[in-house]
Image (cartoon, rainbow, N blue to C red; front, side):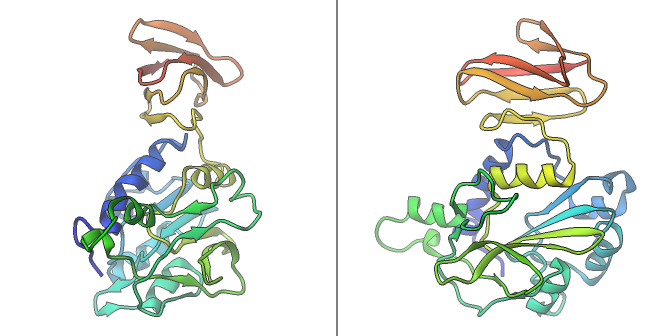
Length: 275
C-alpha cells in the first residue's frame, strides 16, 4: 500500500529520521538502485530498508546476491518488499526478509513493546513505534489522515528470536541468524529506535561514533554535532585520525585511546574537522 503524505506512516518517517540522527551511529542514505549497481556501496556492515515497500524481482534477486552475505546485517522495517510487480505478497516479503512474516490485512494499532532481554534490546526504551506516537500526538478528537493506522505485520517463525510483541502477544520484532548474514525485522512502521540501531551496529562490527542523544552527521573528514544537552561528550574516531579541529574557535583536540571528549553546551552546534 502507499500512504497519504500526512498519514501516520509517512509523517512518522520524520520522527524515524530523528531517531537515526541521535543514535550515535554514523550512517549514509542512498537510493537502493545506486547501492545495487555500485560495488563501493556494497561493503557496509548494516543496511536498513526503511522505505522499500515496492521491489521488482530484479531488485530482490540483487539484494540476495550482493547484500545478503558476508556477515552483514539487513534490517527491514514494516512492509519492506510487500508490494511486488503483480501486487501485494506477504510470501515475497518473507522471502526477502529471510523469516516467515504474516498479516491479516487489517489496519490496527501497532505499538511494539520491547519486552525481551537480548543484546539488541539492552538500553532500548520499552515502547517503539513513531507512527503510533504520531497518532497519539496529532489526534485528539475527530478524524484526519493521522488517524489512519498501518497494516500490521507479525513474525511467525520458530527459528527467529523475538525481541518485541504487540498488545495481543504476537511478535512485532525479531532477529534471525541466516548463517552468512543476519536478518532483523521490525513489523511496526518507523520503529527502529536509537538504542536498537546502536546495538545492531555494535553486533555487526560497524563504526559507532558515540555522542548518543546529540544530533550528529558524519562524512569521511567532517563531523557535525548539534548538542542536545550540556556536559562532556565523547566521540569515537575512525582509525588513523590523530587530532580534531573544533569549529567555531579552531580549538585542536588530540585523539587519545581512539576518541575525543568535548565540553558541549545544549543548543550549540559544533563542526569537527578530522586530521
